[in-house]
Image: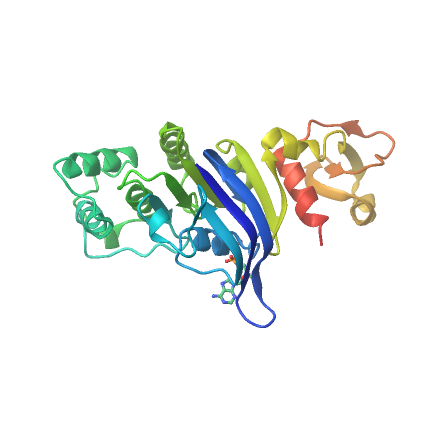
Length: 288
Ligand SMILES: Nc1ncnc2c1ncn2[C@@H]1O[C@H](COP(=O)(O)OP(=O)(O)O)[C@@H](O)[C@H]1O
Ligand SMILES: [Mg+2]
């Protein structure tokens, strides 16, 4: 499958752009959409999920215009919105039955499928309790389960790991990785570590624009050989920060250990292996 986004813009009002002339091609695999709050991640995902319309530009799936013909993608779409509302009085099982009915999923296998999905998101035990009694993480997990109900081929998860504890994150990662190879999966996050263990490719965006897209290795290349560490006296730290992009600082006895990105390292610095986090901070801080 091929999802082609071309010169897509979304203007909310006179001054406010959600997306600006955004172009991106997405193929099968897991794409991590990374960007600070307000970058336009949710705007882009809503347009792909056809619940919002672009102001201009085109969006095609395998050559079909899905702005003009949203049903083409809706049939094969699974979408977890960022603000996922649930029906407090239904239990998990009833809720999934309800969503299945909405999506037109039925048949003799439905019961089995629901049980399998509840198992996959570790909600089997809580399946008979009303969703209103669930924790934030449990609600997020039922949201993930409903995405998978109709055996979708295009899966969109907007900030899926918010509210999940580390163990739940691992479960989510395994669930996603187990999905068939012939899917397009798009995940958004503003937290690098949520994406780096799971995504085949990453797209970094800011202020409605795409900054870069590629495999993690390609994106990391942008800062390769530019990440350093140095230890400084406390009173020198502020001045150092005005001259270099410090991505991490750690107290070390009466001094500070700083990780920074620079073309010109200071004397006594050691070079570090660049990470996706380094590249993300560099690319989102340096581009306006
Ligand atoms: N319904 C809306 N009306 C006006 N502005 C909006 C609306 N939704 C989003 N925006 C603006 O569009 C920009 C992108 O928002 P969003 O897509 O939610 O970013 P992200 O999901 O990356 O945090 C932000 O500046 C946001 O304030
Ligand atoms: Mg968002």
